[in-house]
Image (cartoon, rainbow, N blue to C red; front, side):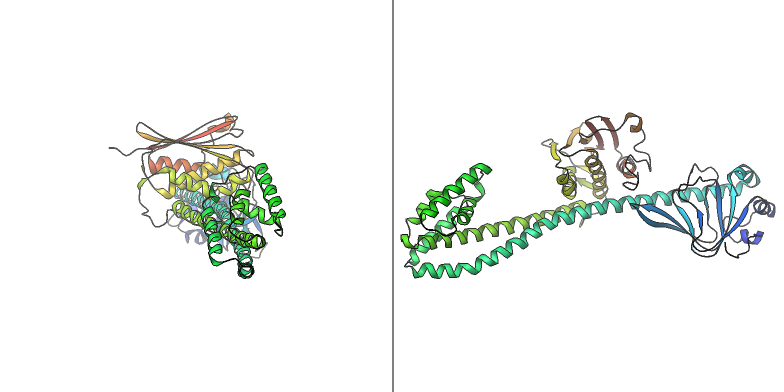
Length: 470
């Protein structure tokens, strides 16, 4: 407890907007029925989870309001002199969602809820001002919570994107290292082959064969058993012809879609004594081609991810409503959440009609809707589940369904899932605003509807967006 004066005067109250201009009789009534307390820095003014039963008026000092999110203590607001907070008249607050901590020597006036009816009776004007404060607080609290919801979603997407980008980037690094090693051996092999009497024309013939068979690489589709059998066959054939490390050469040869017959064609082009070195030189070229293909595929994957990010975040586009194909946003969202889908081995089933009309929408907001719905569906499913996206035009609207085969939502909770701050997830795993945001975006900003139907093994969130009038 600090040594601040634990008393209050009319002048103390009248200096603040909430009490300015009120009659002296009203100010005297507040002072008489209020309780003044002083707090030192670090003192707890209100504990998280405690019953809300008093209104706070900060006369002097500073108070921080702190809450726990994901196990971390966060500051969501600061009360300065003149702040009126805590439980207010007409408020339905039952408990404090966070803790109020003094960060400077502070003096507060508390008014218990038992005095609220008389307080409003004493001054309707003060009652009107307190209702205004409560309305502003609700808007600010909702805005802050929605911002936290967005940041949490962004954190999930960022982690997933980093994981998705890391895989092809690592593949490029590995391929470059192996390619550098391979490239350093090819000149030595070529010099050795030339010393064995292989003519330039014969080398060109072998190289032409390599380029010709490269187009067959993508067409190779072997089961694990078939691949193993072919590698054994090739390795045995190579070993009979004194090729060093035949198992290693066989792996590259089979990767390229070649077999014993193809190697026999190469063997016929060169002297027998030169064949072991020629086939090693050929294998080095095939391996280099394969590594370049891996680098190209990895770079393409990175480009696809960047394109998905641009599409998802709606970069380089008009922020106003425009005609959009919802399938693009759904597919981009699946890409952004790809790491979660892979982690749980969730299969994707797309039920898109051949022709999907465009809708007028704010693209960024729709992508937020798809993120919330798909992310919730993933969380609701076990490993090996199936996520279904169903898109089809229905008369005057476009119907988009996000369907999961999870355990379902209990019937008694289905009527509440769109309520702000209501969540079925564990504490710290969600803000309870995801579905509230979905409903607000679809109804208020797009003139559509969103409904849920759920039973064990099937939960469907159906979004209906109006089609442009022709």
